[in-house]
Length: 75
Image (cartoon, rainbow, N blue to C red):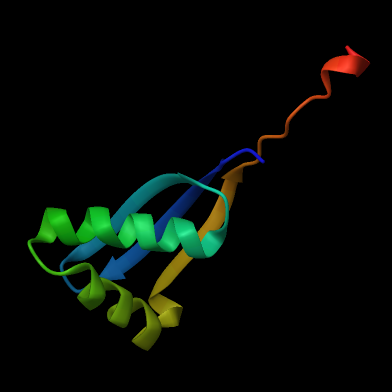
């Protein structure tokens, strides 16, 4: 299994925040992005995750680039 690149857009009251993350799933990417944003803003990651849950229309996490493994026998 290979991690894919995820892009997150978060429309906070203070402005638009863009974050990227390599992760296996959207939920993992959301947690990684929340941790990074929380560290940048000086708050706990749970506060960012709660905000995302309360304001789903103000955030978007989408797959930016998907990577796959190649079978070495088929090269």
